Image (cartoon, rainbow, N blue to C red; front, side, top):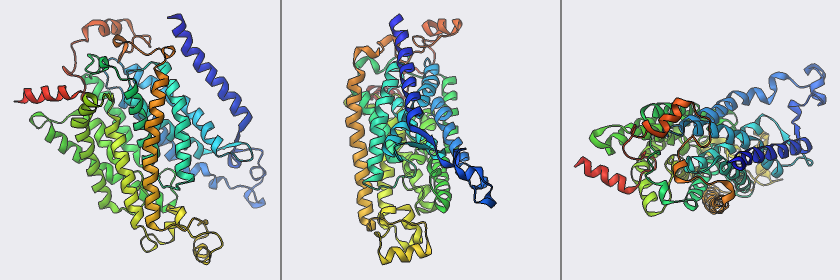
Length: 491
């Protein structure tokens, strides 16, 4: 036990010292945050920077929304486990704080400026997006891995996440403003691959896996925060009218998704009741499904349709696909990330490709080249000069057709899912090493081995709470046999 205690301390402090050293050597402020920049020592009348035009003013409100999503939204969404509340919100806090630093470095390594990593408010935003991918993966293995395994998984995942996103944006030049392909789909399938490699029979149907009334209410706090702030997540990095459109599209997609989730949940559950698992999770699928096309001209009715489809897909996933995956594929998905992030992320990628295939200057004007930069005419062409005369912000692109851009969108989606599955499986193999303290059956879905628990709660955790809550494992990850037994009871 002494070595186990020292292990977490050693790993965290070693990583933090390395981060401090690397930040000291490589990381510098962007000019808009740097007191030594000449522009910040002059008044606007003298040619200096105007404080009102600082990039912070444009991005900070939405950045803060996204930041709240990472720490309150994701953290509380995972508190449904009746004996793992500290672990859910606490390890979410730890992992996210760890990833913010490591993602800044990893992304910076791929975008060096004169040998330095330049940081500004957009760096903080993209680091939050990277944290989202890891927290999604964490949902697939929640309660089944140790805190040490979570840190190692986060460290490894960010390496592959950053490279995959860089390839998708730099070489495929794919568009994914809300991160549905590069964040949600990648994070979900990476986590599912880890869960498959770490799978043990005793993870399934565990007595501590379910929720109780108050833990489901805590989880709803996370749901509501995520639902409210998701438009900021999808729109934060989009410019001008694209950002405005992304907020509108996400808003309506989420609204339709919430309504249809209640409808379909009542249809698939016993006696027409509504399942809180569906309300906590499937209501958010519309935010994921609209993500890739959020800044595109899908129109408000299209956003409603996308949200509705996402709701059906997610509820069906929780009710039928998750049990099938646990029983037949040996993939135990604690939080059901496949239904909230995986399948809706793939749906988003497909929708993005379809919308890209029909996008034209007639529909978008010259902003089609801002949304799809690779479609802009090539350097030194007459067509580019004509466009730049009207819209100087447009830069030279690859001269892609709409169909070719759609093909690259699909290629980026497929590559992201495949990279996530392969690298997730390799990470799972790494996490199986005994040195990382993989928990035994009695320690799974349980705070007591990792947290100081108040004395009266510790007594409850060892005994009196055992019979409280759901009589079957929580439906986020229940097996097919659980579903069949429930149907038998209905008859």
